[in-house]
Length: 400
Image (cartoon, rainbow, N blue to C red; front, side):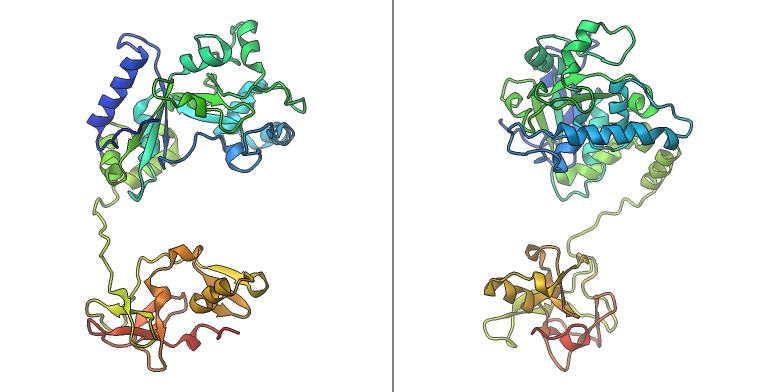
């Protein structure tokens, strides 16, 4: 599938939407609409929760575990009434399934919306600007025409929906603890009844996956019913601000007190932009303390008591010694870089995420010290150009 240039603002987004609508034959006077889905990262596949969480054979063969899903559905309908408060629990199988998705239980449903701005909001909502996001566009009528030979989207739980139409999509949601053999491979588009407020406010609609995790792959060709719009990561904050001006915020998406609280927190949050060099005092360079090695050097003056690596990834993964790799080279990686405490090795969550702090060399006359939270503080005023050193024994056992 050809990838277009990432969009950078609402005007470009609106043009891309209109171009695709015209290509698909959605006239301006047509009440029908494409569907939209916002995803925080552009490379994420269109996968429902139950398939992302490993309850599915990702090879794409007949690995769909209907028995596991049936157990989840059974437990939800059994336990939900006591936890629902004033909210009524649907008796219809489809509405119960929609409610499961609404509250985050694993299902084969994927959320879509009829509002492109709501989808865009979900795409940039939690993106700090480090990566590109995406909004997917789907022609649900064309999808269903190809999958169930009907140019319509069926609401299987709505009163008055014909039994013939319901039967067309019933194979995607067989009764609990029945055979999965008849579950189709491709996804199908369905409409929910608006029995909870969020479904209505988010203009929600759904696709339900069939027996294959890659069911959407065949619909991503150039002239197909599925298109992706990439959102530039650097533009995420500006787009969030523009959406707020257009009235799209947390209360639009979540019309309750929790949504209001988050909307106010976002609205009055400082718009000050961060910079990559802020609070940066040191960098990695060749060191004279170790042969052919590197060390950490001050690149500006550091006052006494200053925390040197503020903003660094502070996550530490602790691994018991007995679980260390057998490879000598890998073992040396742990010995060279880890904090060692009582037979456990503390490392970054992945060694590919080593920051400058992990390259500090040792000295018995150090100019920095390790604090109780493994943050590093200047013991004295440090001049630009000095190598930063620390006494390993003050916070780590020696490697065996």
